[in-house]
Length: 302
Image (cartoon, rainbow, N blue to C red):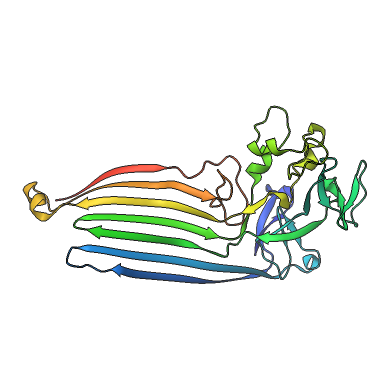
């Protein structure tokens, strides 16, 4: 279990990666390759290749002084018996329909903060101040299953190959969406801002806009966790292999022409969200999504 540990500045560095504990990874990978239609009298073939993987992770040992309380690491908390992919975040409750205030489950062990508004809904003690919010484990970035599948069809020199990659389950912390829900002056906003609370009685998951309360409105919490499932048409390739009589007439031993396209579409829980960036369920703000690429090609054999 590698972890960035602070070290003395005299060394010329601020931190160093060290092996501070132990963890166990387990998984099952399934591969199948099936000829759904084998070559027949008319030359048609259809092949399906499928890959599916499951994965689990468990921390089995931490340093003695961290075993009880664990180690906070961004949106995660390392603790024996848990996974390095488990999210540890403020427990977001929703929006107060009477006031439009953002509400978090209250942590009774937190230090009281000035201007803290307390309320109780359905027996749950709540606060509008992120400093008094209760932290809790909430889901994992590990998907239930992920992999890819390819369909390949051939007919009289023509070949069509279609590759999809997919992931089902798991969560991602959508920090790009979080930043677009901010009320800072001059910043771009998400269309969901239109669903904000505006008057008493409004039922919504977007708090009232208040530049003076932006810290509490967009505080890091499980509000920003989103289903990480996706389906990606990663590649589609259509080509034609010319017969030998045509090829030899051109002075060649082989000729194939094709058109290929990558990332024609990507479907996820939120438009523009790319769960493929990292496996740990966080995003690198500012990265471009996978490029859509179309290629025309010719293979010549002499």
